[in-house]
Length: 273
Ligand code: ARG
Image 1 (cartoon, rainbow, N blue to C red):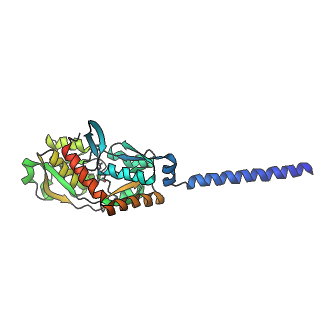
Image 2: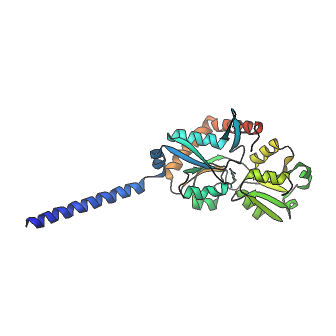
């Protein structure tokens, strides 16, 4: 009898422990991406710093820094989340994979929230709108007036970017040169290895400011994704809400506009590398 009772008590205690540990497991799974960042005390933002004025390298007070309006936006996001900011630089093409693998918490890199990417990751509201431009050597400006003028030409675009799709789908290019870095594309254009490159218009304008021998052609492509947004892991409702609050605050206060003006000034002054 006594033995039977002990067995019963033990069994129910065991069941209790199992239920509790199951609950604990459940809680862990429920821990959302926002809570995870807060618990970690830092947010890791991934970007490709080859995209002035969005993100680029500049010498500030004698030191090489990663700057740009995306970086300022990242700082504000971290501030509102109450955590430190860590910037992880990588090729643009690697960002989505890094986010999915948990190597970074978010992407702030002038990314367009297009339909294909939306299947893989979630996006914030739009924080900036820009069209896509075609940058050429100034000596060639008269040659490139309409899209057909690019037929059969060598077109450069960043690997894994919206501009890659534009080059592939909207231009009858003879050859498409896909490089990981926009800075390298600019070099290819200057040396005549490509005839034109497609980038976001503010980036093309900045390339023209820092390389006067390059100019915007009359050709442009309308952005079909609505603009640039912050990318986060799938199913990050709470995190998206938090990030959207920061974006709204910066838009309403005019701070975002200020960041954009400052980033343009800084990029124009600095020799981006
Ligand atoms: N907006 C384009 C895209 O989403 C290009 C962004 C490139 N950004 C960069 N930091 N290089 O694909």
